[in-house]
Length: 275
Image (cartoon, rainbow, N blue to C red):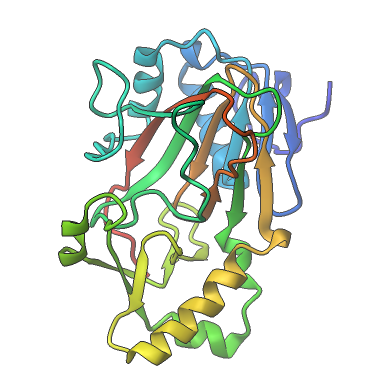
């Protein structure tokens, strides 16, 4: 079994198989049952997430939807999306499903629900059905993207706010934009991260359109470069959990019309993103 790469003092951590997904972010984890977590186990998972930003925790097929929801509640209040299909009987579990009659539609890079005043801090997907090939989720570190910028560009961006809206779900939301910092400071790690995404960010506040468009176009290209990426390859029962405050993601529709079903829980930030 691989030697753990993250040295924490929690009991049982030395029993885990922890393998980084890339040099930028992410790790696979085996050897833990999310249904049986005690407080020290939960703190181990929390510490690993703060280090790696994305975890693929395998061998969780035995979790029911109630178990998934209970695990989400350990992190905080759950988001009610309000627009996407839900698992029957739940308002805060999304059913991310595609197949012969409905092809996947989350190909674009985004941070979940950044169009809300209080967006999710953490999202998690539990794989129920996976295609024979493809169907991964790809993640990009917004810590790394920020850190690679020049000092003058950092100075400029740290002064700016951006407007986000959810028009892709409901055109009426175009009239309800929210403002978030272009660069946020993570409230738990203290690190700075870019917080704009092509899915929901519409403009840089207080800038004329030509300046706003130029800055956002550059950032969209920069913040999803391959050097910042890691890929989670699902097995049935893989739970992918990530930190929306420092990560963007996308789901390439590279599996044709095969069945793919994942159940999603998102945990709300404790407060609005801030500098």
